[in-house]
Amino acid sequence: MKRVVAIHDLSCYAKASLTIAIPVLSALGAEVSVLPTALLSTQTDGFEQYHYLDLTDSMQAILTHWNTLKLSFDAVYSGFLGSERQIAIVGQCIDYQREHANPLVLIDPVLGDNGAPYGPISSSLIEGMRILVSKADIVTPNPTEAALLLNERWERELTIRQAIQWARRITDMGPMHAVITGLTGETELSVVCYDRSTGTAKTFSHPYAPDGYPGAGDMFASILCGLTLNGMSFFQAVETSASISAAAIFHSWESHVERRHGVEIEALMCELIRYNPMYKL
Image (cartoon, rainbow, N blue to C red; front, side, top):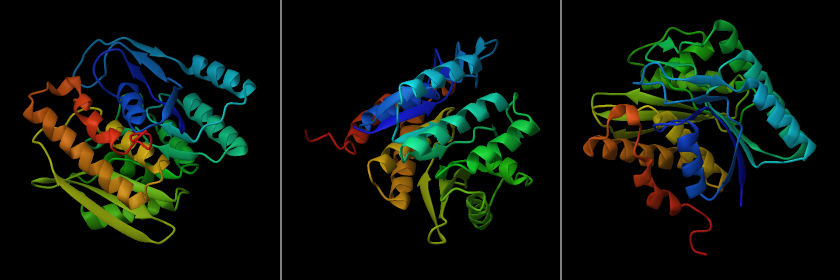
């Protein structure tokens, strides 16, 4: 069984971050350990006056204990990080694992959306994220996050050609693979992906629902992490992750799931288990 350390925040209500990553990766056959970055009473999109507990000190203590136990993982998968200290801690985790194992490193640089950085995101945190991205194998920004990483102006209607150029430039920072998610057209939702080893770019598009859901990026990145760990090729894993994610979003919209509750990932489980190496045991 592959072992993943998932580094995300934990919302006590509604689906986002760890409440998506854990079930998705488990369905795909991975054993998930968690390094939580924050504890929230609810996810933040659509809820007000939520409780937020920063877990930076606990992250360091957990990681120190893990290192005394000489724990190793097949993947390090990082999402929302709320401070420069947390970025440094994740960097330590990656460096330690690379010294003792050969992990897949997937960084989802959660920095912003719709052209603006999230509230706690500062210029120094963006600079720190660029350093963390340089340590990754796969990076999965949305268009806003790609613009912040590259110090580019956000384009509401980023073209496929521009997205490919941005994905290539992100791989110039260090990663072998980059995926820019959430490119919206009139009727389709697209992802653009780039493989630095071959200089190849591909685009995958699927019909999308009229409304998006918080946590959709976490869902895509979690599926991509699990499929890649299971040995699926990069482009096939991106295409499959995009297809499953688009179907889940559309299902949630058709089922009238309230947007702030997040994607109804329970509907994904049967589909994901098909890609679990233990499925036929």
